[in-house]
Amino acid sequence: MGQVMSFHPAASRRFLFLQGPPGPFFRLLGAELAQRGAEVFRINLSGGDRYDWRDGAVEYRGRMKNWPLVFDRFLQDRRVTDVVLFGDCRPVHRVALRLAQLRGVHVHVFEEGYIRPDWMTLERDGVNGHSSLERDPEVILAAARWLPPVPQLPPITAQFSRRARDSYWHFHNVFLGRLRFPFYQTHRPGSILLWALGWATRFARAQHRARQAEEVLRSVAGKRYFLFPLQLSGDYQIRAHSPFGTMPMATDYVLESFARHAPEDCVLLVKEHPLDSTLMNWRTFIHRRARKMGLAGRVLHIDGGELPDMARAAQGMVCVNSTSGTLALEVGTPVIVLGDAVYDVPGATYQGLLDQFWQNPGKPDRDLYQAFKRLLHAQCLVRGGLASESAIQILIDSSIDRLLAVNDSGQRAADEAAFGPAVLQAAASQALGTSPSSSR
Image 1 (spheres, rainbow, N blue to C red):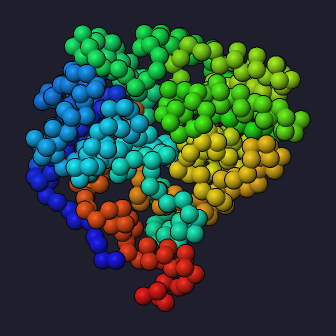
Image 2 (image 1 turned 120 degrees about the vertical axis):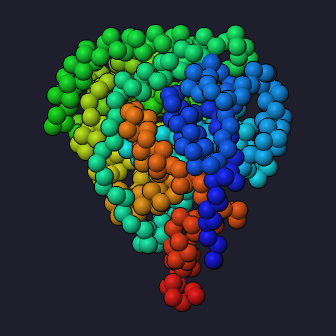
Image 3 (image 1 turned 180 degrees about the vertical axis):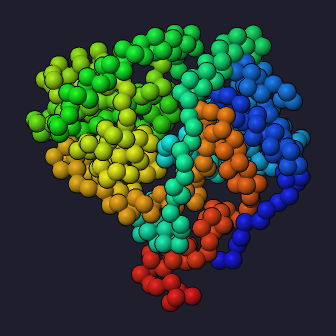
């Protein structure tokens, strides 16, 4: 014990930004760090990166086979102390993260929030399936006794149109920048042109989808149903942290289990992801599969509605590893996870087989989940979002101190800094079956 996190003057820090979320967040965050005295660098790898952060950035236009040594040389030549990136599974980021670790450079990984809305994720060295977040129920409960509850604050302003606009212009410029960045390959599968067409189609059908969602919700009112929120097939949560590889494959798996083992008076409500811009007709796909499996009328597709309300009324939620699972746990609805999710804590989520879940999903341990939320908030969450000017500013303000806080003694020191030595001592005592006072 006794290690504490030290706060280095910003002037001694040199931050290198790689790819961020579409939009101005990384550029504005870098500007705030520079204003505090840090030196800030940016490497652009695509036309979309250049659109989001043009001034003062370095461009890499070479072949990806040369990227590792170029990146490593940049770290050394600029004496980089910290690397900041969004998502740790992109090929360019996987390479960068490992090389930065070999050089003793701190890596800060942003990602969509583990708990939504109003929060984003910021972790050291990895997120989601690569997160070092504690999942032992006893340690979580012991640590949480020393932590304050997650604050109840006014909701963050969010505008879906803002997020869609930033995404469109980013990928529009990825396409236009192909001559300038001839060897760049996006981490997203599929064609950017088809992606843009998908968004146009989605906007054109918005009112029709809303009417369909209302009809589906009326049809399930008063019925027992399970909820299955779809995820994006291009998301690394599916590609890297699940056994399925694609959402159609995961959907087939869930439907087959439901057909064989779910009570006949239960309905499966499959909710489409609100950001799915593929041209796939999920409604047709799901209804065809349902008919083939003898489930006609028992499997319904919905593209809209309020997920928290659906989760509250559901018998249970089936997730691959979607953060939607935390919305269900928040309202006491049972959740089973089929992939790798940070909130898949024994006692909070169902640990049996999916075939058994339909018959007896049980109830989540609400105290354990609330304890997990406290730990998550202390270690991984930053308040804010990407869907409005105010949300981005709040996100910058809540990220700065965590980015400027460093330690050189590994994860244990980071945990002590986040939770305090007493928390770790209590957790260790719990694991040993002793009291904190007797372990001193």
